[in-house]
Length: 85
Image (tube, rainbow, N blue to C red; front, side, top):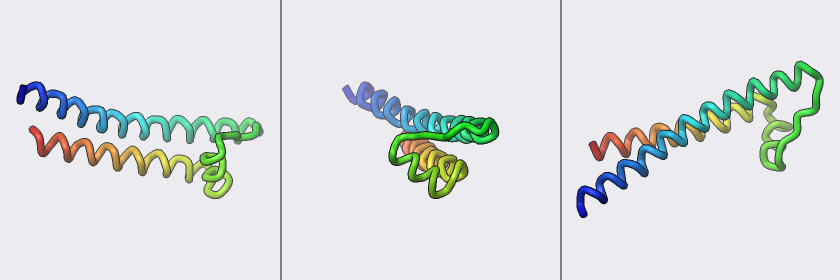
């Protein structure tokens, strides 16, 4: 039972690392997507929360939100895995 618990804990921590990587990639994708929309002269629309960030800080603000959250998740997951290995 102890080995199973240890395996499940490691899998949970791996998901935190993968979530961090996914957030970083999503942030980069959105940045370049917004940049393309702005260059084409199209209106950039998001949900209420992201629209507020975009209206306040622009595409760099949206990028920063995703990158910061992704880095926090990535570092947290790596520290958790490092302590368990």
